[in-house]
Image (cartoon, rainbow, N blue to C red; front, top):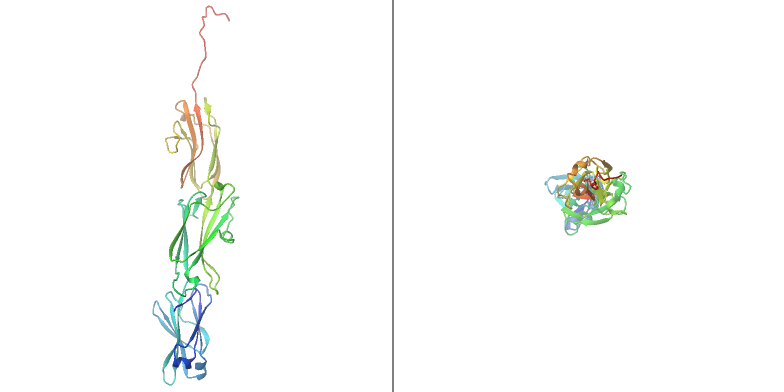
Length: 377
């Protein structure tokens, strides 16, 4: 059976009684422990054979055979002691054999062997949103997104330790209600995760979210970050290790109001000044006023009010105020009109506000006809 040692160094301890091994080579004792060396797998081998060390007429060596490349290296060892192996433990495993050679007959004896597989679960995280922004992935709080956890080097089979067969995925929430930009990844993932679960297969595991999980008193104004982390599990000698992390920036929904004209108003002469107040404009957005003479749905023909268009292509949301006081030329005749405030983002076009009013610029004169000859003031 193959033993598994984690991604760092391993120490293989081989102990055997030469006297017993000559009679029955299966009566040997083998244990495996691990210790960390920070990413490159090195091997330290310890041999203990009381009978061999006291006899003084045997030579001992460790044979290391790389299973993937079939490279073989023989390393002389004392009857007791410890030394670093000549070759690193590669993917595919390493076969270690403890041999001894009798000086007088040159007969060699295989005392023990151990097949060791070095493992390091690998992982990466990709977050997909409808916003094609090249920086940190971002969404609006009400929009869906997907998280792809890609894992490799997970091992299956009997006797495989948990740390070799699964990784831990965590989901952390970092609300940012005051809009400050001081959240660090370390702060965001320092607390208890919002949710977590194990991934036990190699390949891509996708988790879909219908909207952000960040909450606020006004759910439409929630903002912050959602962080996702993959961990390699601890195995008794190693602590839990972070393999990958990624996060998505969450921005609030845009709101806007139109003042200066209201539902039911009658506009005579020059139209009134309009003020548009916008809050939390999405960083990639196109916002404008449209005037319609008929119809009720977004997308129908309408005229963009001159001076009302505001295009953003930036990193953060923004609040803006727009004043419009010259739009009389859009009323080509008297009658009912509707003005709408629209915003277009990567998530579509939405109507933020509307007002319906009537334009009535006709002149009406009330008079009566009299006979000037008989008229007396």
